[in-house]
Amino acid sequence: MALAYLLNEINTVPEKHNVSVQPFVFIVNHKARRESTDEANYVQSQLRRLSIESEILEIQWPNNIDPASTADFELRARRARYRLVADAAIQKKIHHLFLGHHQDDQVETVLMRLVRNAGTSFLGFQGMSEHSTIPCCEDIRGANEIESYERFARWLNPHDPRVNRETMDSRLINQGKTVTPSVPGGLRIHRPLLSFAKSAIIDFCNTNHVPHVQDKTNYDPTLTLRNAVRYMRTHYTLPKALQTSSILSLQQSSWRFATSLAARGEQILENLRVLTFDLRSGRMTVRVSPAFISLCELDSEAGAYALARLTSVVSSQSRDEEPTLVPRHNLRQFLDKNRSRSREWVTVQQVLLEKSSTGLDMSEQSATSGFRMERQSEFSESFSDSGGTIWTLSRPPLRLAEITRTSRSFSLDIRPGEVGNEGAGPILRLGCAKNYNQTGLWSQWMLWDHRYWVRVRTKTAETLSHIRIRTYCESDVQSVYTRLKDRGSELQYILAEAAPGKLRFTIPVLTVDGQVSVFPTLNVVVGGKDSMRVDSGLADHSILEWEVCYKVIDLPFINDRREMIHWKNAQVKRHK
Image (cartoon, rainbow, N blue to C red; front, top):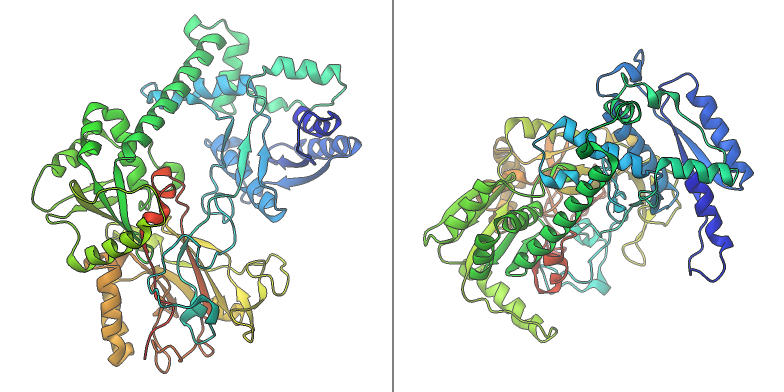
């Protein structure tokens, strides 16, 4: 209530700021106590008295379970709470979420990390950030990126430069849509009360007659670890090293260390050049300069940070699980292999790094060099391509458990949408050219393998129930080429360029009743009268259309030089 009151009061302070604030409050009812519903309704009634709109969100627990009695209640409730709020905020087009965490919460968080693992890295004692992305919501489209699909991001270099964007028509494969990187955006979390003690906030509420509710279970030390830490702090005199001032000092020192580490790591990454990025397979080629190696040797912690950021671009790890630092032995391996003159490989953070003995192959080197010469005239900054080593980063072949995990069905997007508003809802009228209109049902966006956002459009919900997404497998090869007939050589050429070797068995395919139907990142359709002809169309196909976005890449060493990277993508038109 204190935070809602303060945000609502911002507009009453004239000429102190240039923003207009209209707070909307999400009240989360954890439904872990019988009184929780009454308390949520009471809070909503008090907000109404302040003319603040609100919505009560209820966590739905499995039947016949007492959530408060589960061993991991705190973690499960936290995850459910963030996901509920994220979904609601995205639907209401709210981008900034203000949370009421205060100084006591911060102290408890650091103490909990000390209790859980005394050997935690110094980085783990940063506590909560004043500003951050939203956790636990990586697979909710719009939480960490702009929700809509952006056709032909202006800074990408289309793989086929002959494409005329003004003359696209319905004969183009998938209506001319190709893989694009997700645009960074989505939800931001702000914690403006972190520097205030809980007692000061309660005093403020009492002074300004702001009602507030005390959750009695917050003081039950048997319920959660946080409650136990809170009980310990309020009922015992702790050693000086565990008292508030010492814990806050530890938290601030850790934050300064992390900030310095990130700055040093980003400086090391300035000595690396991303040459190509193939959006069709998530394959990236980089040139590592001698300066990069030297700086990593001089500052191994910053080097471990830099290598973690580099591999995160193509990693299939969850965003919430990506480490800040790679293990030191991984960094040592990588540095040692850079000195070798032969081909080398190493796996780091579920990413396969392969070093070329001679650099890029001739065709790729020619294409990349030509692209660079074309772009150099547009940028004052240039860099030398001489010296250093060439590394290709890609996703390793999937293990059996990963193949099973990445085989998934689609859900219908049931949110209401406006006809003609692409990406807004389930029943859409899409326009790719002035005279092209088609209706259908869109699925929800799905984050596949923590790398690709995918959604499909079909004629009916029944048709959608027959469609799944999974990885391309060796067992698919014979069937796919048999169905492609004389067009199989074209697929072979595309795979050889976009996903050579076993890398092709890491790209997604859309299946209908278990049979491979579409390579969505390659814009290849299998089946139909003439699968890969430009004029075959998809009117009679189960999958009418698809949209694919690569995961968010919000790293300065890529985004600051994105127009110098050769972005490879599917051709949107093939010649007869």
